Image 1 (tube, one colour):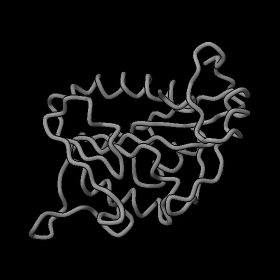
Image 2 (tube, one colour; image 1 turned 30 degrees about the horizontal axis):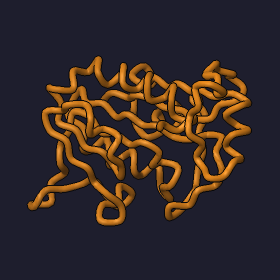
Image 3 (cartoon, one colour; image 1 turned 60 degrees about the horizontal axis):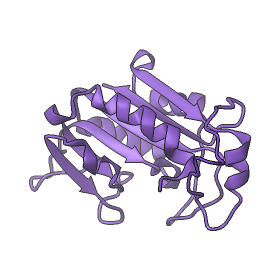
Image 4 (cartoon, one colour; image 1 turned 90 degrees about the vertical axis):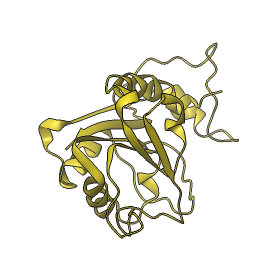
Length: 185
């Protein structure tokens, strides 16, 4: 099952990433595994705490930043103590024309893993990416949510699984549950 909070985000994001021609991309994922199923030319997952994007770019044996066409961060940035610094490190690892895809929660319960620090709407996420050094005209962000999903976020266990029979996927723009975006160097 997929989390109710992520149904629309995952559909939209798959379209975005598939439009980039995954078979031509060298990809890194920060503390996740969402990108494994795309058929990328190469795929490397970096897990916290062995790899902490706040501490610096991921480097090779000689200490040089690794280089990627696309970097993915699914439900990671809300856990970072230094999200702006981390964006600087992401940009250091992107090749010219490279992309950074990010997805974050907005209206979800506190979930320390190991920390829970921030929330962003689509507008806030766009501002974060711009402040992190991406050009405004090369950033696209979206959000989705509705009151039913917000109520379901109060249930345990959390997060709630999507039940197509009872969980409508209509968007209520004034009730965002999650935000996501794609930024290009």
